[in-house]
Structures are given as C-alpha cells and as structure tokens.
Length: 260
Length: 140
Image (cartoon, rainbow over all chains, first blue to last red; front, side, top):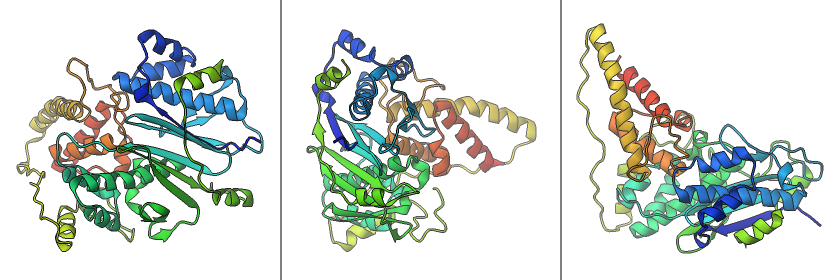
C-alpha cells in the first residue's frame, strides 16, 4: 500500500548528456520550469536543476498518480518547491524537499510529517584556509558546536565536522521553509558519533523533530529532518517515531521512463 | 553580526579567539591565522552638496566592488557576464556561498549585515543597495 514515503538520490556525475539529450529531457517540463532551468549560468547547475525537477515530478507522479502534465509545483517566497495540486486524505500533508550539492541530487517525501533534506559536498576552500572558511559561519554555530569542530583533529577533519553540522541545520530550516534569517545559531545538535541526533532550539530539547545523517561517499553527506507540523495529531506523532528509511539510488533513465 | 540578544547561547562576534582558545586547551598544535579584519579610515564630515556627489559616485563604485567579490566567490568563468540584475542563485550560489559573500562584503565595506537582510539579497543589485544603505547610515 502506498505510504507516501520516498528517499531518492541521483549521482549526476554519472550523467553526461549531449545537448540534444538535455533538450529532450528538459522538454518534459512546463515552460516556466524550462526557463528557470536554463537561467542557470553554469551547465553543472542547469544539470542539477533539471534532475531536481525530474525527481520532483517523478515522485509526485509515482506516489500520487497525477499525470506529469497535470502536476503543478510552485515555490514559496524562500524558494521551497511545493505541490499546488490539492490532495485528499491520507496525503493531505504530503510534502517533499529536494537538495543538490556536488555529485548528488536528492529528494525526500513524507505523507504527514514535515521533511527537510540536505546534501553537502565537502569542498576544500580555495581562497582561504579551512579555519578561515569555518569562521565565516560562526554566527550560525553554537559554542558547543564550535568546541566539537575545534576538537575534531586535522583541518580536514574540522572541515568535515563543520559540514556535518551545517547539513543538519540546513535540513531543519528547509523542512520548516525558513531561510538563513531563521537564526541557525539558535539550533544546537547533540549526538553520539552522529547517531541519536537531537536538536535543542533556544536551549530547549525539541521533542518534535527527528534527524538522521548518513555518509554517501568520502565527500558527501546527507541529512534528513522530520518533524511535526503545528497542528500535529496522534497519527502524525506515531509516524514520527518510525525508523528512518534508507536512500534508493535512481538513474536518469528510470526516472524518465516513469514519465512515459 | 546579527544580534542574538535574548537567546541563552550568544556569539557577539566571530570567535576567532574562542576557536584558538579551544584548540590550545586541548593542547593541539597551535594555529596562527592572520586576521582578515581590515581597518578603515575615519570618515570626516563633508558639506551637504559634496556629500551627495560622493554618495552618487560611490554607488557605481559599490556595484563594481560587489561584482568583483561575487565573481571571485562563485568562480564565474571569464567571459561570463555578471551584471547588477544577475541573481545569485542563477550564478550557482548555494547557502554556503551566500554566507561567504555576505561576510566578504561586510569585510570589504566595514559594515554589519543582519541575517534577515542577508536572506533578502536576490540579485547583485540588492546586495549593492543594501551595502549603500548601511555605509550611508554609518557615515551620516
């Protein structure tokens, strides 16, 4: 039975389309999406934007059965995509979130809980040292998080530790649809070796959110934030304590064939 | 930087020293990194009309400086136009880039940008306008 939960990833470094192939995939989407995709300056960004849309439309089509050409996805003022089509129970809270960084584009969906997803690609800074880079983000980290980063070991390990915290924070703000203005410094993550992750918001442990963080490869990590929407009911609360579903890798060919 | 007054955990300024101190406490190899903070010359009061002229000339200087910082941060290829109307997202900026660009602008112009304001910067022109506003507020 369809439960509305998906966790998909695409490794875009494995897709190297010709101009014609790219044009053929982009033509699957409504004109306004095509325009949004082609406005990206760099081809890698165009590619990630296209794959992101492909994941969104394929997922909605598969989970909710809406034909590709009837799917309407809008964006909030902060840029978060959401489904405009009205959906009936039991999926009236259906929501999804996408992320892309480095080689991966991912999507996560939930029928009831709010979901946020973030992928980070650990990138050695080019114009400054790792420490100088991390210091740019000091207002977005708490004192405890700073200490943990400082004690992580070498510069590379500190950088990786920073990126893991950032990944979790981003998943949270994306789940709630906020942006950098939220005040990421209010959020503190506690964990045991990056498992059993809990969030403290303004110093108080949040019982409404669950987090998970997993390694995709040496350079990439992915996080999921799942939480209760404001008017949470019992069904939603029990849904929250379900174990986190692992990610499935999809290929472009599979996703495109879903369309036809 | 953005004020965090009212929260129990607050970081008033970038903790260059606290990061250093934390490392020393754990007796790791000591690190030294040169301060990126620049010092700015004192601004002298000018008569009103020449101040207006300076403000207008400063606008295009500001935009030029912003374009330069953005090009560098986002590694925009040579020969790709970056103009005032260019959107940061279309240039490939993600949230990490946005934070770094804002930090770079704060340091280059000697200003402090609130997190809420940083979120509203969509185009290069938005950034230049915000900087202009903050620089003028400082000197007036």
